[in-house]
Length: 401
Image 1: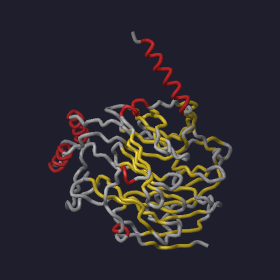
Image 2: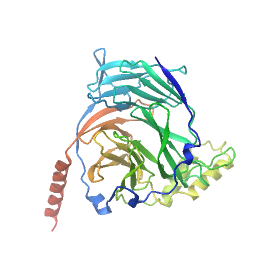
Image 3: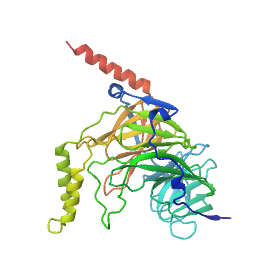
Image 4: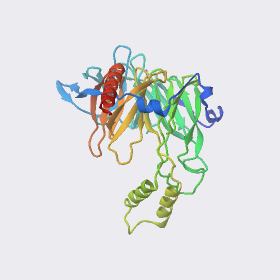
């Protein structure tokens, strides 16, 4: 029997919480790292790179990893190779197909996020149809929750059969810090509660006619994720990170110590020329040129510290730094669940961290025009990395006169 319910998500929930900015003293734990600690953090060696191979009909198939879900019995991998979800066990062996694409009841069209709950059921948030679907361990639809769009909805994540919504209101200007909200919907769809209110850059203005202005050059953007325990980890692009538990209690305030990097006039001019080159000279409208000029005039003063955040299955937090200049690689900083430094790795700028733990990462390269290529890679233990780092520093010191 399939249960179909309708849940109304609207303005009422968005008025329930305060709009103050969280401070370090508001959190149960506050960890402040210095620039010196950032510079001394060990680089974690990567080794044993190998393709993430999925086996179907006896053949090895390399395909896109849409998401990774973990069940208590050991784990499963969910992929979306051609629109229909498929489930594999942790060894890469094919298990079953999950549902089907479409607009009818119980079908999905645009999978925004998914997860495996404690009972082994696959829970899917279909953004196109705006509904939450639950498939049992046989891949059969058991529960469908039709949602009405959340006001100011920006993104969502599935966790433990429920759903977390992130909403950013409009501002007086694009990029203005505004009070954004996290709201959690329980698996039954019967209740929604405010988890946290944070400051995030506005993506749109209150009212600007038919044409929204371009965002300021190098505007930082909010990034967030839900960890294995349901806690929300958030960064608004600065060097600080906030973590809230499922009840909305401020758990951790983390100042990473990442040094700020000023945006230079040369970078602003290069960005302006890059955008102008996207428009045919004969067709470029004066309003477009004006909008580009305004974006350049209101460019951010410093580059965003982070562009992505991931919390892995062991609770470690991984933060992707903004690549420097025209660099083709990006640094990922890793912290233990208590906020202590773990180390950092250097990955190609086109490579994304999908899943894993501090000892093994699941990565995917996303080159334009090519399907993502998933790979596993092992990491050296932090103590081993520290020993290697210390040996290098000792060798450098011995060479000094």
